[in-house]
Image (cartoon, rainbow, N blue to C red; front, side, top):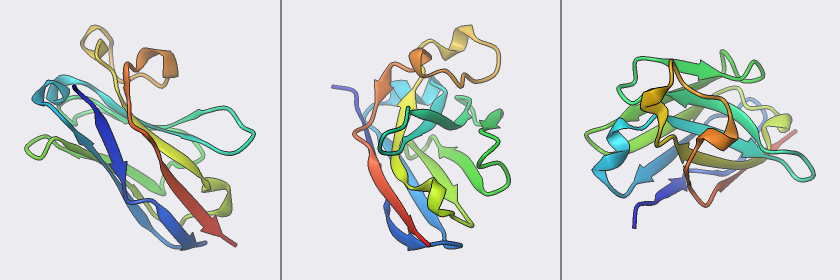
Length: 128
């Protein structure tokens, strides 16, 4: 079964940093754009960042631009989200996802419905 597994979440003080990892189970994911999304309690899941299959294109939510960096290492079949200068409002469960049909799109998608494979999520908690 193809799957994504997130890791790297935890508790951090405001201003601190975390790096999330998303390990993919198969090389099929090498061609898929990857995205990071997050969901806080009582809120809708929202787009955070996305990266194209070859890593050449990235996109970020305005709320994280300049603080978060998405990257991928296809040799390791892993995507990353480096989160710097974390704020309490970043507290959420973070999910990675893969866009199976991303090859039919220009750029990368910020739309949840376009992502076909999802990880189980990893909790990020930022204390004030």
